[in-house]
Structures are given as C-alpha cells and as structure tokens.
Length: 112
Length: 110
Image 1 (cartoon, rainbow over the protein chains, first blue to last red):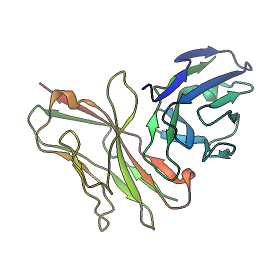
Image 2 (cartoon, one colour; image 1 turned 120 degrees about the horizontal axis):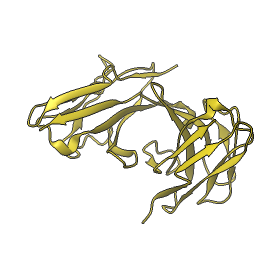
Image 3 (cartoon, rainbow over the protein chains, first blue to last red; image 1 turned 90 degrees about the horizontal axis):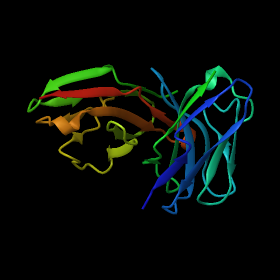
C-alpha cells in the first residue's frame, strides 16, 4: 500500500520554464491537497480538491494551477516558474471532512 | 484569522527525560487540533488528534481551551523520537482553514 505518491522527488527549473508535479493516492480518499513548505513559514495550502471534479484555491494559489484528473490523481502545474516558487511541495489526501491528512514524501523544487 | 505558534525551533533533551513540545493557538471558535511528525528522510505523518484522546508512541496531548494550548508530552524520551513535530489547527469553514505551525525539531541526546 503506497499511500500518497509524488513525482518527481527533486527538480531544478530555470526561470520561466513550466512543469507539472504529479500526485496519486491509493486509499480511495475523496479529498486531495497541495501544500508548500518554506523555512520559517510552516505548510501553506496552495490548492485543494474536496472531491473529484472540484478544485479550490488555498492560501497561496498565485502562479499555480491544478487538475483533479480522477479520484486518485491531483496534479500541480507551474506555468512559468519563478525563484519565489523554490520550495518543498507536499501532496496530501484525506476522507472528505477529515482534517487528518496522509502526506506524500514531497518534491524539492529549485528555480534558478 | 487563526494562528498556530510553536515557540521553540529546537528542543534538546536527554534520553529518558520528559518531553514537552509547546503549541499555542489563536482561534475564536472550537478548533480541531493535530500533531504531525516527520522523521529524518520520511514523510510527514499524523501522530495524534485531540478528539481521539489517545496515546501514540507514548505521546499525549491535551487541549486546554483556557490557555489555548495543545502541548505534546512524553514522560521518557527515546532516541527514536528525534524528529520534526508540527502542530496543526483545523478551524470551521473548510479546508482552507487548516493552519500549520512552523515546527519544532526534537533532538534526543543519548
């Protein structure tokens, strides 16, 4: 049982490049989330999907887009990467209405 | 807006000593509170939640609404407890209302 799987684990981008972070869960959870973690700032919610077919902005959505491809998969896209998007990105999932999350192992992204 | 404060970035204790990781919050409603743990080179995982009132790996946490705190405690620290610990608060109103603290690194000295 893999839980929540994120790919890639590491990525270096040049400013202006685009990329998609992939996330998949095999727990049949309804809800999925993308967070970013920066030093001294804790985890901040970028986007979330309460259920298949819905997505909503979190605290820091600017510069990102998401796609809830199906119940299992929730991707995060950076259309034009900026150095301010250098961070560690975490995907998480849960049952709808449950705030106890299962996290992926993270993607460390560096934008130069 | 709600806030979660973990006042210590680093807490060092000797093996066998008691541990208390502090978490204070500000929120006007009834929160749901959690502790997450991240061991070295592992993913963030849920440790416990206040509504369960359970002990996990010897850790307990009690919600004190009067002091707006949710401190994590363990009577005798073990070396394997060394990790990053994050306190989180879920406020009413939806997923955007989950707030994490910045984390405390617990270092257990052998």
